[in-house]
Image (cartoon, rainbow, N blue to C red):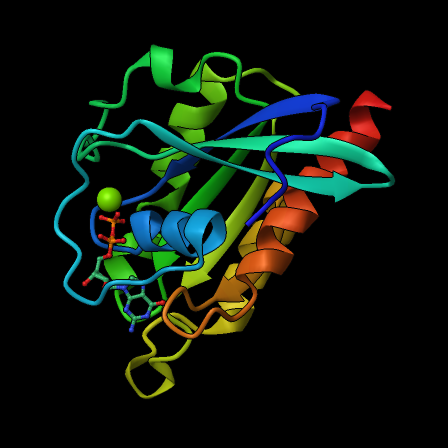
Length: 177
Ligand code: GDP
Ligand code: MG
């Protein structure tokens, strides 16, 4: 999954944030290793994973950071945000509360991160349509108002995971080029 021998043109740090159990670690594992685990335990140990991809003939290493169970309000430290050029703000489409907390995460992000950080709002678990609690329109409207990209994803079914990362990475790439 990615040729390790090539030279790297860019390294972009991306942070994953959002409430506990929305699927941040599974989104990362799907993107970095094309794996998914239904009984994933709370994140342990590993701080970030990487995957290198090509954008306009340059090799871009995405270094994606995952909260190690620090999702309590204000428990994520500023070191986590330091140097981040992109953020994925994740909620669970079946849990209204996780969407209601998004403004808080956004505020925290904006107070700690670089003001030019590229942000994408992610409604995960789109495979659970029959349990949906957050209408797509609500999220779309919020994202538009706040100037965020927006996508619904399923780490389980691998829906829109590639698109989500390529959207944010391409936008960052275009900003630095
Ligand atoms: P985190 O706390 O935000 O890192 O959440 P996890 O990645 O640990 O996922 C929490 C739970 O949701 C686990 O049981 C996952 O298997 C499950 N999960 C994650 N993504 C999806 C998804 O896209 N669809 C479904 N149905 N379950 C998911
Ligand atoms: Mg996790």
